[in-house]
Length: 334
Ligand code: GDP
Ligand code: CA
Figure 1 (cartoon, helix red, strand yellow):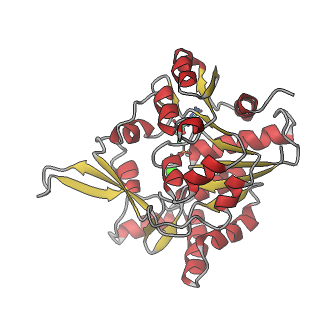
Figure 2: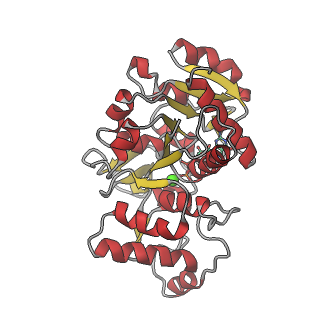
């Protein structure tokens, strides 16, 4: 197995990719070559313009994590970060004050914004940024077009009774603490897959849906026109790992997002939401955590290969073992 394609969000996806690369390098993934190439199709629907700068949280989390520039405690932004520019902007009273833009991180956004202004597509800009960070994967934005997830929440002060905001505002300012009533993926239906995205799925030997947010990370990638069709048509097996363990997300706000789209918040709920390829869905195999072992039967009944294994990404070795289980689940024993 030479070519692995992963459809990734930010923190969950990046951590999985770290373990996957570790497993490839250490030769612990059954049937996977030690020089196998990993392509990452990353979600860009979290992207936001802040203070005139284009910020791409999921692309940057993957790039910084794999390039060893990430702040490991926060899971986003640069390590050894300082916040002078943010403090200065706040002193001017400029909104938004809730968005964290570190001084080191700002350089990335300045380079990206200048290149976009000069006419380069986001995919070229991402490749240019990766020349510094050498993430060890080919990192592809899902689209070069502007796509934004917006969230509607109840708001008694508004004449319509609701307020719609950018996903980042819901997540960072509101901390996802109020129910999301509706999600709107602005621009998604009209987006064109980024260069190389469809080929990365079609030509892969294995496609992986990591434990990323099934709605606002993987869900948006699947919503890019032609991506679902490519997953249906690829000869590669498609395997996913549940981001829901024991009935809730491990980190983040997947629970709120699944509730907003009416999907059961469980490992089985997410697996059945993605669906078996044999029944028009996108998956051949689905890994659930040991805590959810009693749900395996529901998934196999729906046509999915499924086993329960430990799914907590507590170390690169533990995560590599998850990747090995994912590979084994969908490839014939040799
Ligand atoms: P984001 O863009 O930063 O929100 O990151 P992703 O979309 O890639 O991943 C977020 C998802 O990762 C959340 O739904 C979490 O439940 C999941 N997650 C985080 N850590 C773990 C872990 O150790 N194990 C599993 N199974 N899921 C995890
Ligand atoms: Ca994200």
